[in-house]
Length: 235
Image 1 (cartoon, rainbow, N blue to C red):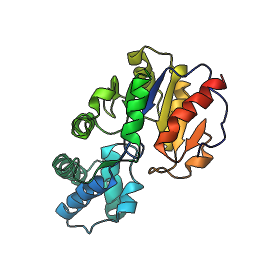
Image 2: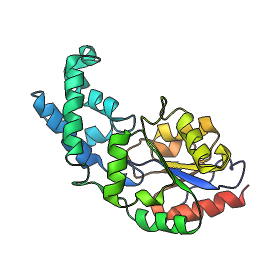
Image 3: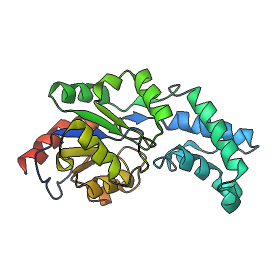
Image 4: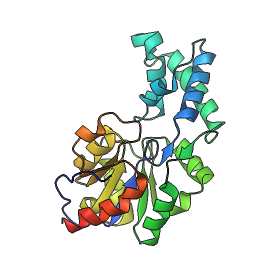
C-alpha cells in the first residue's frame, strides 16, 4: 500500500529514473552464483544468497570485495587477489546474466503504462555498463528507457547527485521534476543531493527503507502510478 507522503516535490514530476537491481529486477541469485564461483576459484566456501544480497548496491567491485572481506580482511583491498577475484566474477557473471534474474511482479506492465502515459524513463544504477546494457537487452526492456546511467558512466555514482543530474539533463527536465525510484539508501541520498523527489520500494535489497524518509514508500511496483498522481496533486 502507498505509505504516507513526506514533504512534497517542488514541481510536478515530468520524468522517472529507476534503480535496477532490487527495484525492477531480482538479480541476487545470478550475482550470488557468480560471486560464489569466484570464491570457489579462490578456494573459499560459498556464501548464503541473503549475505550476497546485503552486499548489493555499490557496484560490482564493492560487491566482490565484500564477498571476500570476511576471509581476507584488510590485506585484500588493492591486492592481486582482489584483481583476480574481480576478473573471475566478471567472467562468471557475464556468462550468466539472466539465468535466474527476473522482474519483480507488475514491473513490465507498469513500465509500459508509464511509457504510454508519456513519461520519459531512465535507468540510474551503480551496476557497471558492461552488465547493465546487455542485461536490459536480454530482459527486452531497453527500448523503454531514454537514458541509461550506469555505475561507470560518470566518475561519480550514487549516492552522489551527478548520476541523477546527468539523467535529468539527458531527459531535458529539471532535476526537481525527475522522480527517483529505488530500494536503497544510496538511491535516497542521490535523490536528496540532486533535489529530486524519491519513492522507495520495500521489497528490494535495502534495509530499513521505511525509516529513510522518502516522499513515498510502496510495497508493489504497480502502486507507482497512484504515487505519481498523489505527489503531483500535492505540488
